[in-house]
Figure 1 (tube, helix red, strand yellow):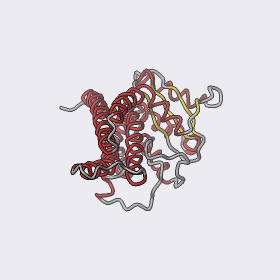
Figure 2 (cartoon, one colour; figure 1 turned 90 degrees about the vertical axis):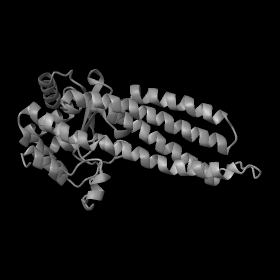
Figure 3 (cartoon, helix red, strand yellow; figure 1 turned 45 degrees about the horizontal axis):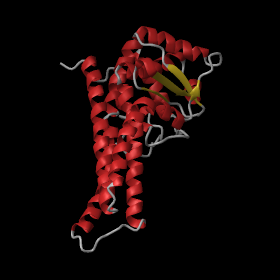
Figure 4 (cartoon, helix red, strand yellow; figure 1 turned 45 degrees about the vertical axis):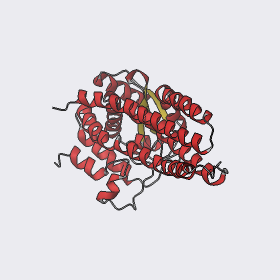
Length: 299
């Protein structure tokens, strides 16, 4: 029977699988480049680059995510109440207190990042602090601490770097294919075929990367909601917080496709999107209505 511990082990396996997939994709792109431009050095560069990016994504992806979001470390005096909430809930959860960061943005949101519980961080927006009551804020913090305890943060943070760079590489390949003056050998019948394969690979790669990103984000939100509610012993706090956050229509200023899945709520605030089955498949977050209904015992 599945337990929290099997979920944690699954996240570790998924992380290594994702890093392996990234390695294969980048090497495949490098091979396509090398064939199109008839230069084997490109393949060697791709191998070195993919290994280097895997290393960077594991050790520094949290710093990149925080930098991309504009987060700065919380002042211990100005944000004493927030730090006390995080410290108290961390003790209850049996976790080291994560570093706390503030994002100067009126849009209410929060996320957790890091490679493990000893190197974890929580970032919250000023809009979240101004909007929520104490018990609601505790619900959000408990949710983010659950991501840390469930080992979601390594997987979701690695996705930030890997998905972003795969998309950049693919875009670069497409631009070079159309505008870079590809070297073609008219006597080589496979030359045109290799070019087509390379372009198709470059077009499909961001789609595959996005699907991986979506696959790792939605299921974990439900589990973090449940774990967070157990931590505070007050599900209504998180349910009410989610409702308030979703009712705020202001998008996050530094919203990014690479980091959107990290946040507790969709940072783009797209309220005009019809929630159909097909749309749900391509959402980085499950609908708030479903999350609130579960927290309030609707199922």
